[in-house]
Length: 491
Image 1: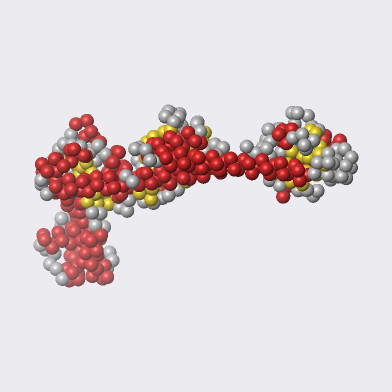
Image 2 (image 1 turned 120 degrees about the vertical axis):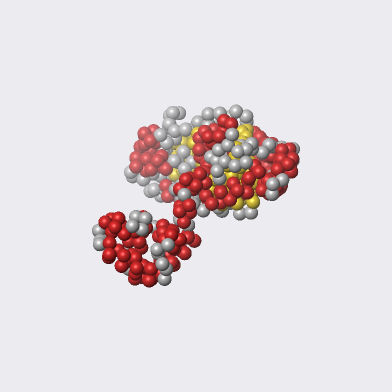
């Protein structure tokens, strides 16, 4: 530790005398430096935690001392017999009023001796902390060689800095804590602070105030595929301790990245199982999946297809959240969840949860057997085409309920319809709406004319104009159905 004011006053070779009562100021406050100045206001050139040495005082003593105390000066030394003999009473009184310790420096003690003592203690403290940092880093490096490297590194870090350390997984749950049980009351606050860092999917740092004190948070892993968040008790960490923490962040990130090979192998296995299911080889899929991934969901199942830029991060999250089966197949993430048993009400719920967390789009099929997965996959793809910001993962059940005409609400259908109706819009922008009313009236001129508020002969003439513009006879069902589909697509 750096020198304190009480240690400075106790040095017999300096022969310093404390002039203020013992209760004034903090005698155990660390002294970061000793500085001499005769300026009327030296505070712009001082830092908190320093001792100021003077041989004279300005005329306005009280404001002068008030500025020093407010700035964080921990002590004032007055050198006697340079400008005057003895320390002015006004200076003593002002120091007592403002809580600033005042000591007298005899003429035979040069200010440089005080500065040298403080500097030596600061240097000794820096050397001691650097030595500790080297020893702590070495102990942590040796811990990284143990079988469970990550757990050993975090345990050793907590022991070295004497503060709790926690790892929050990529799924947002508390993975491990050192020492065990240290964050029982603070875990909820830590998880809440880590969640936005994980959702950002970018390398970032943050902080959290908990019942267990302040914590510094640092994401682990590469942008777009974070591996977790490291939370370290940060109350009172000095630069040496922060240096050790920085090294641990790198080691923890490395330890997590080393698991990527295993993760990649599991991902390839999942893809192989899914493709075997789609190919109809259920026996092969079950024999491959069960020893590593567990049993496949029981039929009937719902299939959800998700697309987006964060599929890898979503797959990592699903590793600890999915009760069913999932796999990455090209640019799609496929989930298969059981529709039977107690979880039937929640079937398909993971798709919307993953989509909301990772900004994905997708669709969910109707219940299906394992033998009919290609049809379920096609249904999920149809539903995915209906995804909107308000409904990022629609269900095929809803698509089927809406009927065939609802399938016309796609960009492709709208583009074809706009081209087909372009001659009508160019001739009369109100003509498509008139034709829509006529067709909604089953092509009955009298009913449609009343709805439009025009004479039926006028309506007949307008329909004849439309036939001429389109080059089609609208007396037949097929032509009317095609026109109606185009009108619905552009509605």
